Length: 312
Image (tube, rainbow, N blue to C red; front, side, top):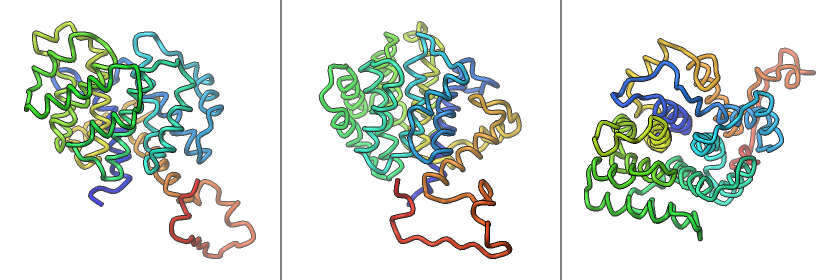
């Protein structure tokens, strides 16, 4: 395995956060003006606490924090909110699709949001299982979407053509940033990711770049959305080791709030706990009495047959 699961899980979350927090000149904002990932954090906490997907718990957590989605940012927030599902069920495409569609029912029934969510999650699942081939990713993604009335398959095919032609960033921007549509945002994020497959830094810098005269009408929201998606894709593929160390150090030094959490360090701890639950590892520190009752001062050992420890 090229990168460990924990590296890819961390890379996905941190990549999405960094991609949504970069300014057009490559600087990290101390606090993203749109808290894009708060719902993703709540979903992650739900999966950690219950060890499974529970829609009622997801809804209750959102209502408890009074999370309301504004009309201008609802689409991108939903896609980022489903990242925990993409990670938790990445090994099984059938379960991945089923559970993504279940979660999407919490919010509006928008076919474009559905297809965008499925496309991003499927690419992440291929990255985590080390089956992502840049030459076949887009055809495979379109096949995963199935029959759909949206323009996302068509936009992804345009990305494929641009990549085959070796088209540069300015041409891709001219193609996809003329209108602020979610389908264009998804396409641009895929272009930035696939055109710089092994370079996380360049992927997110391309995604957040808006200095070209042809794209000056693009709002910071569109740039932030493209950056967050491209960052999640590249982070899943390259792992946390592919994210520039100076960016990571800067976040650790600031240790400012991240997506509703108190600090960047807390985000890393939450991700580690998420990986532990996904892998089937039981944290003794969470329930020490339950495990040590009747066997005080005894060394507790847990054994499992292969392939059963992660059943769910």
